[in-house]
Length: 92
Image 1 (cartoon, rainbow, N blue to C red):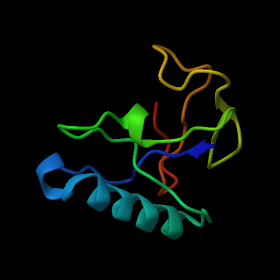
Image 2: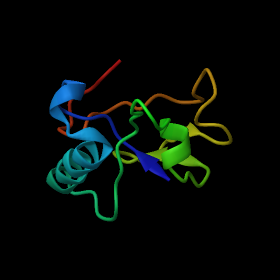
Image 3: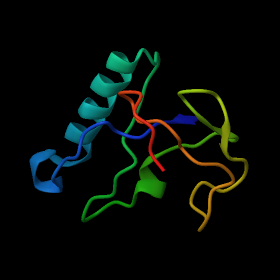
């Protein structure tokens, strides 16, 4: 699996639930040149993110392919940072 940070900041109430968040995620991925199907890592009032996403390990940074997590994305710490947002800006 691959992950990236969103370039935008969005209010939860403006997303139209996980469906709207996934549409924004797909749009940002396409703008960044990331192919494939993308889903937002987001929870709703009735569904946790970990229950709506299928993650295949390892999890890699979409920007540069570096390791983010090898075994447990939902753990308390990541093995490596997600360094770049979808617009290319560095995030620390």
